[in-house]
Image 1 (tube, rainbow over the protein chains, first blue to last red):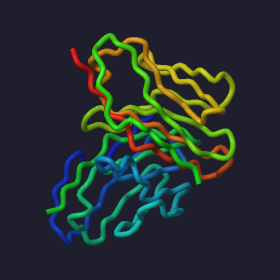
Image 2 (image 1 turned 135 degrees about the vertical axis):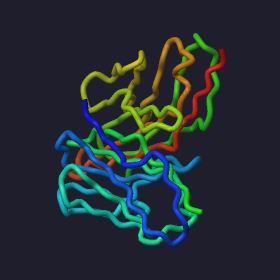
Image 3 (image 1 turned 120 degrees about the horizontal axis):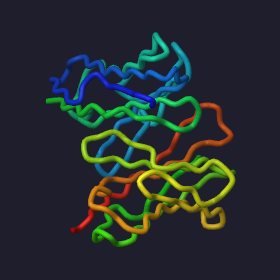
Length: 110
Length: 115
């Protein structure tokens, strides 16, 4: 079975802190994705990566950056966390179109 | 650009009743279509997918969905709902002609099951 893990289930950070969310997949997938999920808005794509060191902006990249130094790991970085980045963050990976999701990280910025 | 509409934000059914969740998509060619389920506090789990061929697809947990090109729909059905089906359901469309394999998700339908 495909397994996508995320470093934390719950995270509380202060405004202005630099935040790292880590995602690891064990199926040698080429593609990895970061979404944020907010009530009433569904899933919105922040960034995705289709190869090591390759990345593309999604629909809402502002305030975020990403890093993919190894195929299995995709990191989401909040350079200076703000309260409007309080959300559920979901990581996913795929070989082709079908995406597999991690359990999510509930981030609260105070 | 592709898009997905789930017209129902919240549906309540009684346990044992039948269920149909609606999904309409906008896409120029034959899309890849998916239904995912999300239990509270969890990630998304794939229920079923349509790529081509038979328009009625079977998934896990007794769910099925039917692709209707003429109506641009991919509705999810289950003949008899169980209390454990209470969750949020997301329809998604993928780009069959693209190379980056992004999915576009609907905003979700929250299912409540009454005993």
